Image (cartoon, rainbow, N blue to C red; front, side, top):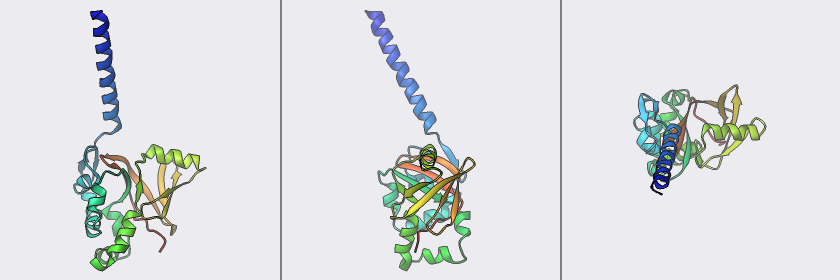
Length: 188
């Protein structure tokens, strides 16, 4: 009887260890913008540490979206880098950051967010299921179209502009971030 209890306890402990290890491997810390992105921190807590996302963080603050992106979620955020914002016409970012343009900025930023947590594998599966394209409904109410070029995931916005996912599966406590190389915009 004692042997059976010991084996049951040992089996249970081994199962918990294997499950915990699998979870830890699934949601590893990724470095973005020179800083570790911890899966136990929320989207904002991680983003503020990325030197590649200072423009995005400034925009999120100006749009009063910090509290939203710190909430439970889950959210999938397609996060443009500073270089992505720099590709916009000169003066665009400065204009968007003005208080009188807050509503437009909110619309553009929430166009980069999908409700729910969608890993790169989830997005690729949706693309394959959709015969090469997947329509992603954004929090702003618009649609992003995901597609593959080789093994790389791209997004096309409602204006025909595309962005490539450069870093996928940056897990957060309230969702996931996929870093993109361009700003996507909704139809105006």
